[in-house]
Length: 504
Ligand code: ATP
Image (cartoon, rainbow, N blue to C red; front, side, top):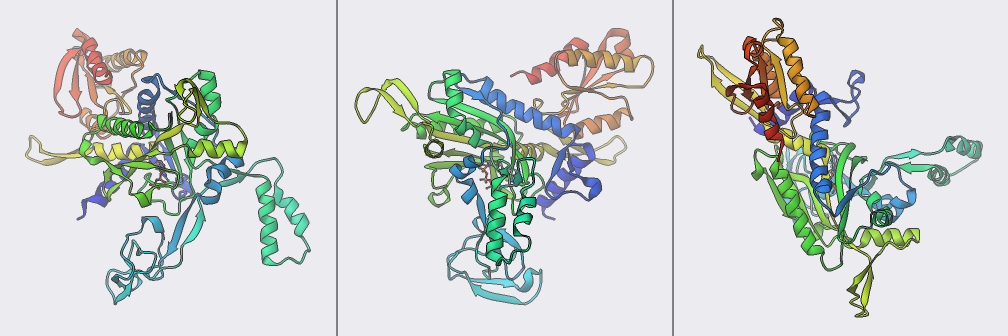
């Protein structure tokens, strides 16, 4: 059996069983591609976001954060090009009827003869046809028998304002004899009046607030603005659980630098970002950098790297690190009439050869998906370990080897029995951890074996067991999630052990 879908199925099932990720609106049959992060998922997501923020903002003098609104002025999206072009070319396969993104389809030289099964079924009549001018085939059945590409609007539109413009529209057109085209035009005009869009990326706010941030913080180029938050894309294809969904979270940073230094900074940031991912991974070799080919680059981008992860279905994107030139600031300056530039009094202007240079900064953008990173670390952490117990029976231990900094709980405090003052002692120890800001689970239900198994499966790095000896001499057993080894130490030593894993 192919291990790939198997691993994804195991992750999806673990996410639901243990409370990492649930299907949205599940009791109503679920909403396609919408997910709710449960009690453990929200912790894991926050921990990843917190580690990113620490690395990108707190540990640097030249990066600051913002938290912008999800809905922005419609002109922002016109200037950025999203309203006109934030669309994916969409194609229908005439053979198997699947709809797919043209830019993601397998490429073949036009004219190459392709064999495919009628209807895209497992067995059946084999047909043959040459690849068309488009140079790709259906990713599902391999057929080159395709529809033309169509544009698909990827931004979610809503209306802003207390009055629904549709009422006025109905008033105006009611009783009029309009052609289909006239009707469409009028409807579009009405809906445009009050249209607002949910952001498809967090990046634009950093460009639009460039001046406010630079002036209020007196930042000197090079400097960066970072942001985390929700983004929304009306994706044609939602796939692989939370890998691609319509509502997701991003962690992006726009790094403004002097023209001419962008290559240097691109190299710096692609390496920084790779190091960041690897620092929390069990399998760092599953992360790689891939430089974009010239024909993959967005028209405003001078170079781009994807940080890719080897998912169960193969290598795919995790983050894009792009050199965006001065395109975005120039576009917003042009459209808003506000000068978005930077003056360096100490630099010589290459045009005038005089001291004092005003320029539009170039931008390097590391753009990561928070929810996609969460999936990555779940895949990276999932392990099944087989062993034989004392009775010679084979058993499997499922363990989520999450980095302690990412783990939802850093330790589980477990009274061996629910009596003899053990639960109270466990609560006392939990409080010590919580007073130090360490999230622990105080868990007294089920047998100790079942509790160990549960905490292995949710990635808790340590189980600290309270027993009669704890009440006698203040010692506890600390069980290591990864080795399952146990040691008897004092409560203070147990706290230090956990803290040591959380410090850098
Ligand atoms: P893809 O090629 O996978 O559609 P993209 O190149 O459109 O991604 P960017 O616009 O560069 O993605 O967004 C930056 C990051 O945001 C991506 O690398 C990914 O981690 C995340 N991301 C983008 N779209 C989605 C989505 N629909 N669901 C989850 N995460 C996403």
